[in-house]
Image (cartoon, rainbow, N blue to C red; front, side, top):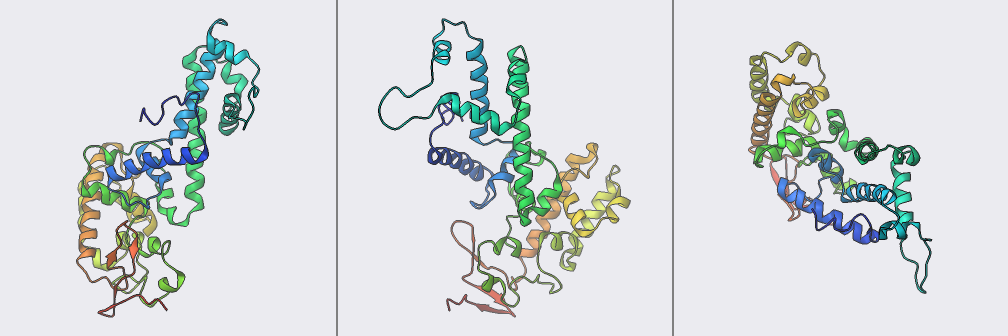
Length: 325
């Protein structure tokens, strides 16, 4: 996004402006992927292999610093860099560029002296990118580990980078798989983040239509008897793929099976593309079967911004309204 990053080497802006720029980037990404507005920015960036705009600005600042330090002394940027950084006019102090760059070095926890002495610009740039990539991976891991609803996503362990299942034009199957992976589905594990504990505590509010467990991604993908036919078709197609280790798959618990189906680490390299097609087909069929059934205790109406609404639900075969008392 060139216009959003214009003059990023020397301009940072205040916290409000920085937040607005990040919002523009993520709003565009969510519209392209047909995600809900509440989809986590952290996991969405991990799926796309996309860094925050701040990361790109940080990298450009450090690269510009190296170029300035290497310039002939008569060049204006080099003259300014050698000058004393101080406030020369009255009024509120501005943001010092050297202070911003120093903060970036502290954030990436890089050895400034060692990296600056890397020699040619190509080696310096590679070391800077490595340090910033390490910072982004650590930030993502901390975010995923701190939120309980990212448990399945954390189990995928696919790191940062554009995921292969997103290649090509977006369609409903890709969007649905994305929502399964990041947990943006109309299920209790997501609804409880937007409703009060009183509402989620109502009888049947979290129970799967099978009546045997709380509805969750793990339950409907690996356990629920309602989707046994779809699951049997999935396993049959997996057996027909020679590279799949079905003995290993059958020894997994429900959570591990869910992660194997939604991710690509379990699939052999030769079968990843075929495995992606199989998993998308299975997820689509399961979700279609789920939506054709009565939503027992679930949400039946959504609000305009995609957040679940409590305007009505089916409990014991009767439509009820949320109480304001």
